[in-house]
Image (cartoon, rainbow, N blue to C red; front, side, top):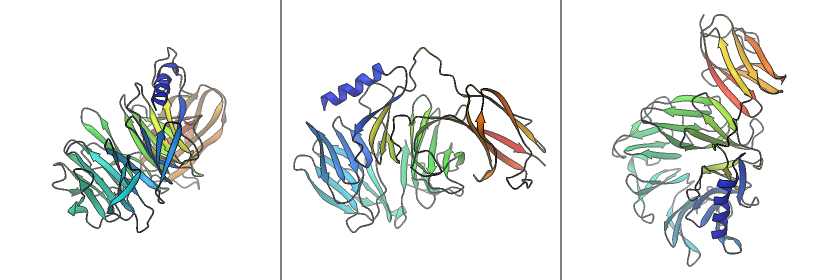
Length: 405
């Protein structure tokens, strides 16, 4: 174990010129979660995977383990299930290598530790449980018989995703329901002057994507639309990472999103082409890192956000839309620093694709494309806000447009 931590630490110093993925858990394991204590424990589809001298030891559970927490030097708690009668919250004893059920919960979705009240929470198909010690569990009455999908807290501000998103400003004493929102599967919080909550709506609907709330969960606005998102992780320096499933319509893997310029950077070279189930990080190494738990192992990303002394020049530059607002047409100007395939799509406010303007290989240099306010069938679209999505190489940028009739 000590040798593994030393190797991970060295990566933070030698990997200064390009990002790199390092395998933490072998690729023959479907990994749903991993924790560093400093021992490494992983929740997998086969059971709990434990790093021991000489290799990995699998504690089989006969059901997929979805998430886990360490509650003492000798004990873990975890959730497992796939719709069976044995779904629930369990305890694993590291000394006896045995596990036992604490509470049966059909289709458990998450286990969350709240630093504000020092309680554990478990969301499942029929409600929300809470525990002070991780062993004795009680129902949160407000969510009785409601499926709870995800949870996040920041101080006294609690947010739970169910059929709608619910928020509390007094540590869960009183709850309120949002009116215009979708059930989110994962949350994060940007720790700005005031916290900004982030949530992902998964799947392949027109509304799938990343959303944000600047008033504690009361109202949510779309940041960008994208299908098959699986998780979200916020790091300091305003770095937000999202992950994708392995589906035909999207590229699986990990992407960073920058709010300042609404751009994406892909970090998929060196990562298996597999569904990323969860994003986390290793707090025990002294560098920025992201850990991707995937259907083919777990991997740690390092070497991003470092000062190498050389400026990294984006491929996609000088994106401008003029006029904006416009009627009846506008011109999109962009510059690519190298020859690459470029794709430009226009979406409406509901996340529906209106038209593909460009999907072609472009030489380096400046280019323009005209949008005449029509869809792919040549029909004029209604007045309103539209989003221009530009993709070049591994970069994606969104720009907002306003059409006025």
